[in-house]
Image (cartoon, rainbow over all chains, first blue to last red; front, side):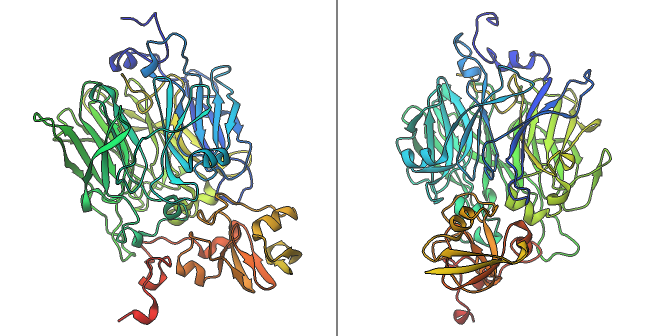
Length: 451
Length: 122
């Protein structure tokens, strides 16, 4: 064990699982699209059950501008820098997907009250790289890479922004986008020199809202891309077709030796599994298919819309949300070819299965999830994207979003919503806001990659 | 040329604006508090509803034909051709968003680049 040496993160996924429980959560809350002319903000939430302010927002950091649409975020450093004593997991990079501003937030100086350290303006990013609409952030050693979903005027395919560890724009990361049509999420497995990226749509397509009819006109993605990580160029694309409409969140196994990974196809409501076979070829298969549900009054059956997936740190369980149906599912993927449903809970959604939980009306459905390093506590929020919220859950404008916690049985499988944890974003001081992605100060199940 | 812009849901307050400038820039300069995002006509955040008048918004790429037919205007790229009356802000968005599983678009209601013109329908 080399846990005394060291830089940020953990020597291995097994070490990460033994880390202390998270006491604080950082969660994005937005006013974009609500009619409340206030900045989006980063909430710090008390997650220490021994604390008197447990299950409440203890500080709020407003962004400098209005209308960023904060969405996803990532750390300046993770376990990929574990061997470097000079590095520290201190700054959250919090992009505005509409403004393209990158907010660099200091969470290290006072973890209970983060402060704004620096802003990289969207206008500078557009001018220097012709990129916009930042999404996923990963650190790769000393480099920070951000998937950008569009060019400077919102057309696909976008590319990858490279910023230095001192938060200066280096330029474009990739050497080629090949024939890639769209960008969204990415994850990599350095020991196999491979990166996998997925496809949402051009910002000009998804930002105004979801026109289902545009899927058939190929305005949304249905491919998965495999990259040569060192060459920074795509080497193979997999056409997923009707099984893989709108492939969003990409997760490799945490085990750095594994070639197995998974992507959630949001609109097909399928989980796609990929791996490298014995002949060295990348293969894919559909392992989970969520049926569309008829709605008594609507002409078109409702797809689950799998907006997020994640893997537990031991790679045993896969979790995902059906944002429109309203359920969170837990599958045992010990055999990644044969996923076995082991748990399911309901909150909100369009099927009216659980309109109220822990005394709060749930508006929206289960959307972003974050799992504790030990795999036992899953935090879930309800908002997806302001314009899409407004289409499917218009009452969220007045009700706001909420955050719940789900207790997960890591031995036998199973999930239960914790009756004592609820953060109601309908009661925020400036009016109802919507909550999105969550990160933990010590790292979580979607933040760290091992070299 | 100056155009008179009336904001119906702000007590019918009026402003004189330059017809060559995007309405978002002109109204912001007059102190009107408006939501906006991309500033290139792609993200719909600044949509407003045109009650009277005409605008030139050929640069917008956010609105489908149904939203255009319902009077929506992307203020960050739209320029006033005539005097105009608007409803602004999220209060004007009552017809902007729809659930596509309840209320599908017809082929002529898609965005301009993929819509089938009405006269071509069988």
